[in-house]
Image (tube, rainbow, N blue to C red; front, side):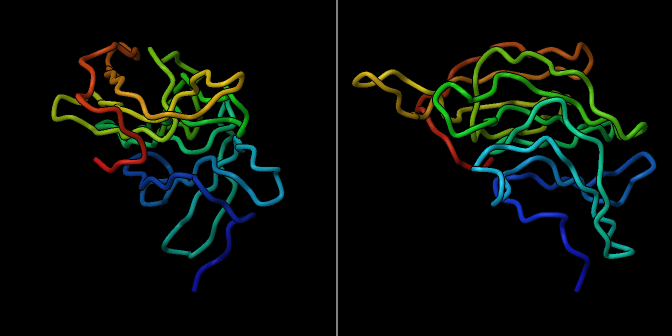
Length: 176
C-alpha cells in the first residue's frame, strides 16, 4: 500500500525519472480530475517508491491530458500534444520539457501539427517520433474527432520539431 494522489486522475502520464534530485521517482503529469468538468490540469505529482508517498511537482505551462511523456536520453522528459478541454479545437500542438536537473518545465514549444492521443517513441539517435493521434475536422456544421496520419520528429539538440513522412494509415490511441 502507498500514499494517495492528491486527486484521482485519468488520461495522465507516468514517467520514471532517471537523473536529477528526483531520480528514481515517477513524474505523474496532467490528466483529468473528476471534479474539473473533464478539463485537463497542468499539475504534476512525484511518486517516491522508497517512501510510498506522492508530493506536488512543478506545474506544466499548459493544462493537458491524453498527451505523451517520453524520457529523453539526458533524463529530461518531453511532454507533447494532448488536449486541454473536451471542446472542439482544444487539441494541442505544443510540447514542453521537464528538466530533471532543476525539476522545472520549459516554456511551451510549437509542434508542426496537433496530436491528441498520439504515440511517441524515443529513437536510437535521441530524437522522438510523434505519430498519429486525433484532430478536429468540420462535419455537418460542427466538428468531429478523427485519426490523423501526421508524424513529426523532436530533436532535443535543437529543441525543435520537424515534419517527417506520413503514416500510411491514420491512427490514434495505438501503442508504439
